[in-house]
Length: 288
Image 1 (tube, rainbow, N blue to C red):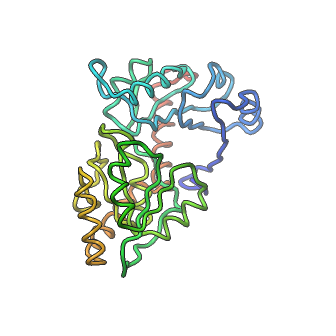
Image 2 (spheres, one colour):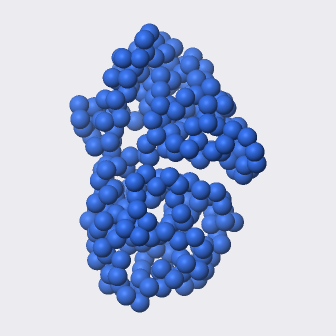
Image 3 (cartoon, one colour):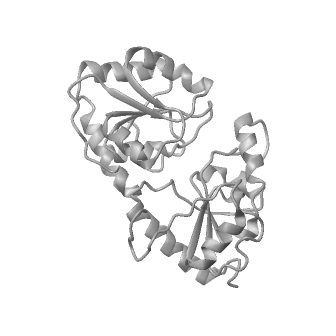
């Protein structure tokens, strides 16, 4: 959230693994919050929140193995090793963007309390703007061999902006307004649900995605287009090029569904639930 909503006033503090924990400690204690939400909770050093009179929520945003044993993709194995650096005692509750990773998360000493995709900042919501020409295509995400299998043919035929590295909110907002199709591709050939899907839908773009798992209530063919091969992606874009507007009904429905994930609507619900749950059942500081 960028503005107060539902009785909550947001404040963003940037902190990365290589940052100064003492500075973060001072910033938080200078004006103590009621709740601290940490994205990538493994970056918080042990004991940093011990004296902080706040409820703490860790938000897992990265894909992880969905099984406690058996073969897993190396990319998922690496992410699980990163998560093992988390200090469970730092957090009252844990939220995961994917409910199917709960078993693996438990291996690190954490219990998944809720599963919620990352809410979408209100500023990224926009109207569905009719497209009267060839599709203007956006993909935001780092390049991998798996992704380039899909992107290579698309880039050769269509107008594609590939934002391969980090961008600012202002830049992303402009990119969303300048495009009418957003592609979603997994990092590697394993199932997941990427945060960009909801951002694209909120901005009124037609989303063409590899199969999503979980779908978080989105319906393929209704809220977005789901395809599994590079040829299918090319076919969908080819149709959009030959018949602009053919997917407008899907764009409107996807934009409507994205309202369920608007930050000013979803965050207050999560935080109110968090506060009530800790009061009822206890947490790291408050006994049950």
